[in-house]
Length: 201
Image: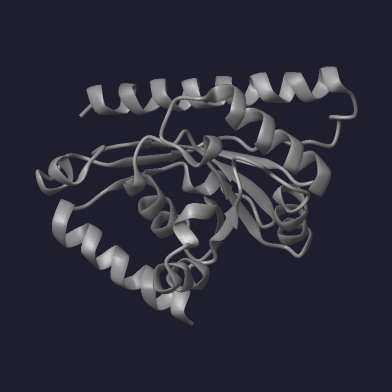
C-alpha cells in the first residue's frame, strides 16, 4: 500500500519538476521474477526505474549505512529496499536476494551500491544471484540529469530496457563469464541506441 502511494507521488513530482520522460522498449520487460540491472549514474535513476516499470515493484539492494537512521530506514523498507553490508558481506548478501527472487519478486541491483562505473562488480553480483535463483536478467539504461541542479533545468530523461539475458545454460564458470560479458555489452548497446534516438529528434 505504501509502495504504490509513494510511487504515485514520485511519478507526479518527476513530471512536475522535470517534465515528460521517454520510456523505450517497455515491452522487453518480462513477467516476474527477474533481476533488473542498470549502470548506476544518479540516484534519480532509481526513481525513474521504479516509476516506468509499474506495476512491477522493485526490491533494491541498498548499502547498510542508509538504514542507520531509523525513520529513513523504515521508509526504505516500505519501498521494498533491503540492507547489504558491502564491506563485510555475509551469507545474507546472497541468501536474501535469492529468496526474494524465488518468491516471485524483482530484484534491483547497481554496482556495489555506488554511482561509479564499476562494471566488474556489477556483472559479478547480478550474474551470480540470477544463476542461483534461476531467473533472467533484464538490463536497463538511464539517460538524464545526474544531480538535482540539472534535474530542475528540465533536462530530458530516457529509460531504455533491453533484451532479457537468460541463465538456463550458465552451468560453468566460463558460461557465467560469457553472461557477464553479455551484460556489459547490453549496457553499451542500450547507450548507443539511446544516443541514436536523441539524434533522430
